[in-house]
Length: 170
Image 1 (cartoon, helix red, strand yellow):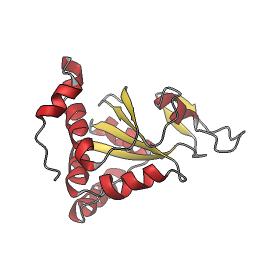
Image 2 (tube, rainbow, N blue to C red; image 1 turned 90 degrees about the horizontal axis):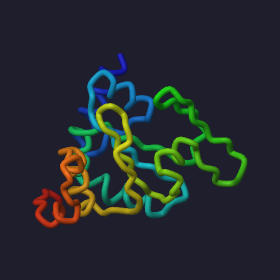
Image 3 (cartoon, rainbow, N blue to C red; image 1 turned 180 degrees about the vertical axis):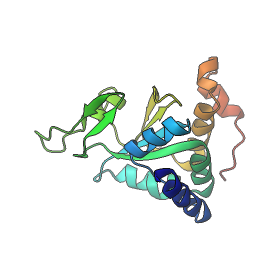
Protein backbone atom coordinates (compact mmCIF):
# COMPACT_ATOMS: atom_id res chain seq x y z
CA UNK A 1 0.00 0.00 0.00
CA UNK A 2 2.73 2.49 0.97
CA UNK A 3 4.67 1.65 -2.22
CA UNK A 4 1.66 2.36 -4.46
CA UNK A 5 0.93 5.64 -2.66
CA UNK A 6 4.60 6.65 -2.80
CA UNK A 7 4.82 5.76 -6.50
CA UNK A 8 1.85 8.02 -7.24
CA UNK A 9 3.43 10.89 -5.30
CA UNK A 10 6.74 10.33 -7.07
CA UNK A 11 5.07 10.54 -10.49
CA UNK A 12 3.32 13.76 -9.43
CA UNK A 13 6.60 15.22 -8.15
CA UNK A 14 8.38 14.32 -11.39
CA UNK A 15 5.63 15.91 -13.46
CA UNK A 16 5.85 19.24 -11.65
CA UNK A 17 9.67 19.18 -11.37
CA UNK A 18 9.85 19.03 -7.59
CA UNK A 19 11.53 16.67 -5.15
CA UNK A 20 9.32 13.97 -3.68
CA UNK A 21 10.33 14.15 -0.02
CA UNK A 22 9.99 11.17 2.31
CA UNK A 23 10.13 10.88 6.06
CA UNK A 24 13.05 8.91 7.42
CA UNK A 25 10.71 6.06 8.33
CA UNK A 26 9.25 5.95 4.80
CA UNK A 27 12.69 6.01 3.15
CA UNK A 28 14.04 3.27 5.41
CA UNK A 29 11.03 1.03 4.66
CA UNK A 30 11.19 1.71 0.92
CA UNK A 31 14.94 1.11 0.87
CA UNK A 32 14.45 -2.35 2.41
CA UNK A 33 12.01 -3.30 -0.35
CA UNK A 34 13.83 -1.59 -3.21
CA UNK A 35 17.39 -0.68 -2.20
CA UNK A 36 18.47 2.84 -3.11
CA UNK A 37 20.74 5.38 -1.53
CA UNK A 38 19.12 7.82 0.89
CA UNK A 39 19.87 11.54 0.92
CA UNK A 40 18.78 13.35 4.07
CA UNK A 41 18.40 17.12 4.20
CA UNK A 42 18.97 17.93 7.88
CA UNK A 43 17.47 21.36 8.51
CA UNK A 44 15.79 23.56 11.11
CA UNK A 45 12.77 25.83 10.77
CA UNK A 46 14.79 28.94 11.71
CA UNK A 47 17.71 28.35 9.30
CA UNK A 48 17.84 30.92 6.49
CA UNK A 49 20.39 28.94 4.46
CA UNK A 50 18.13 25.88 4.69
CA UNK A 51 15.27 27.89 3.18
CA UNK A 52 17.57 29.21 0.46
CA UNK A 53 18.68 25.67 -0.38
CA UNK A 54 15.03 24.54 -0.54
CA UNK A 55 14.11 27.41 -2.85
CA UNK A 56 17.14 27.48 -5.14
CA UNK A 57 18.78 24.05 -5.02
CA UNK A 58 16.04 21.51 -4.44
CA UNK A 59 13.63 23.37 -6.73
CA UNK A 60 16.07 23.13 -9.63
CA UNK A 61 14.44 20.71 -12.13
CA UNK A 62 17.69 18.83 -12.84
CA UNK A 63 18.41 18.33 -9.13
CA UNK A 64 14.81 17.30 -8.40
CA UNK A 65 14.80 14.80 -11.28
CA UNK A 66 18.12 13.23 -10.30
CA UNK A 67 17.12 12.95 -6.64
CA UNK A 68 13.73 11.42 -7.44
CA UNK A 69 15.24 8.85 -9.81
CA UNK A 70 18.32 7.82 -7.85
CA UNK A 71 17.73 8.44 -4.14
CA UNK A 72 15.09 8.39 -1.48
CA UNK A 73 15.23 12.09 -0.56
CA UNK A 74 14.39 12.80 3.09
CA UNK A 75 13.62 16.04 4.92
CA UNK A 76 14.57 15.80 8.58
CA UNK A 77 14.04 18.63 11.02
CA UNK A 78 17.00 18.40 13.41
CA UNK A 79 14.77 19.75 16.20
CA UNK A 80 11.86 17.37 15.58
CA UNK A 81 10.15 15.76 18.55
CA UNK A 82 9.13 12.64 16.59
CA UNK A 83 10.91 9.44 17.71
CA UNK A 84 12.77 7.65 14.90
CA UNK A 85 13.98 4.06 14.93
CA UNK A 86 17.12 3.52 12.88
CA UNK A 87 19.09 0.26 12.82
CA UNK A 88 17.17 -1.06 15.81
CA UNK A 89 17.71 1.96 18.07
CA UNK A 90 15.06 4.57 18.84
CA UNK A 91 16.25 8.18 18.76
CA UNK A 92 14.35 11.03 20.40
CA UNK A 93 14.63 14.70 21.15
CA UNK A 94 14.92 15.05 24.91
CA UNK A 95 13.94 18.71 24.57
CA UNK A 96 15.66 19.83 27.73
CA UNK A 97 17.07 23.08 26.24
CA UNK A 98 15.85 25.65 23.73
CA UNK A 99 16.46 24.51 20.16
CA UNK A 100 17.40 21.05 21.35
CA UNK A 101 18.66 18.65 18.72
CA UNK A 102 17.13 15.30 17.93
CA UNK A 103 19.44 12.43 18.90
CA UNK A 104 19.35 11.09 15.34
CA UNK A 105 20.49 14.44 13.94
CA UNK A 106 23.39 14.41 16.41
CA UNK A 107 24.30 10.86 15.38
CA UNK A 108 24.02 11.52 11.63
CA UNK A 109 26.07 14.72 11.84
CA UNK A 110 28.67 13.24 14.20
CA UNK A 111 27.81 15.93 16.73
CA UNK A 112 28.73 18.72 14.28
CA UNK A 113 25.42 20.57 14.31
CA UNK A 114 25.52 22.71 11.19
CA UNK A 115 22.49 23.58 9.07
CA UNK A 116 21.77 22.77 6.42
CA UNK A 117 23.67 19.50 6.27
CA UNK A 118 23.16 16.73 3.76
CA UNK A 119 23.63 13.15 4.91
CA UNK A 120 24.13 10.29 2.49
CA UNK A 121 23.36 6.64 3.28
CA UNK A 122 24.11 3.66 1.09
CA UNK A 123 21.64 1.03 -0.10
CA UNK A 124 22.12 -0.88 3.17
CA UNK A 125 21.15 2.21 5.18
CA UNK A 126 24.70 2.71 6.41
CA UNK A 127 26.06 6.23 6.79
CA UNK A 128 28.33 7.29 3.93
CA UNK A 129 29.03 10.86 4.99
CA UNK A 130 27.48 14.09 6.22
CA UNK A 131 28.15 17.19 4.12
CA UNK A 132 27.64 20.45 6.02
CA UNK A 133 26.64 23.78 4.54
CA UNK A 134 24.61 25.41 1.83
CA UNK A 135 25.18 24.31 -1.76
CA UNK A 136 23.66 25.90 -4.83
CA UNK A 137 22.35 23.61 -7.57
CA UNK A 138 25.50 23.86 -9.69
CA UNK A 139 27.80 22.78 -6.83
CA UNK A 140 25.32 20.22 -5.45
CA UNK A 141 24.91 18.31 -8.73
CA UNK A 142 28.43 16.79 -8.88
CA UNK A 143 28.12 15.71 -5.24
CA UNK A 144 24.91 13.80 -6.03
CA UNK A 145 26.60 12.00 -8.93
CA UNK A 146 29.81 11.35 -6.98
CA UNK A 147 27.91 9.57 -4.21
CA UNK A 148 25.39 7.81 -6.45
CA UNK A 149 28.11 6.45 -8.77
CA UNK A 150 30.12 5.17 -5.76
CA UNK A 151 33.17 7.24 -6.75
CA UNK A 152 33.96 7.65 -3.04
CA UNK A 153 34.57 3.88 -2.86
CA UNK A 154 37.26 4.01 -5.54
CA UNK A 155 39.55 6.54 -3.86
CA UNK A 156 38.52 9.16 -6.40
CA UNK A 157 39.41 12.64 -5.16
CA UNK A 158 36.24 14.73 -5.03
CA UNK A 159 38.01 17.98 -5.94
CA UNK A 160 39.47 16.34 -9.05
CA UNK A 161 36.12 14.76 -9.91
CA UNK A 162 34.40 18.14 -9.64
CA UNK A 163 36.84 19.72 -12.08
CA UNK A 164 35.98 17.23 -14.84
CA UNK A 165 32.26 16.87 -14.05
CA UNK A 166 29.92 17.86 -16.91
CA UNK A 167 26.54 18.54 -15.37
CA UNK A 168 23.11 19.52 -16.65
CA UNK A 169 22.52 22.40 -14.26
CA UNK A 170 23.06 25.73 -15.98
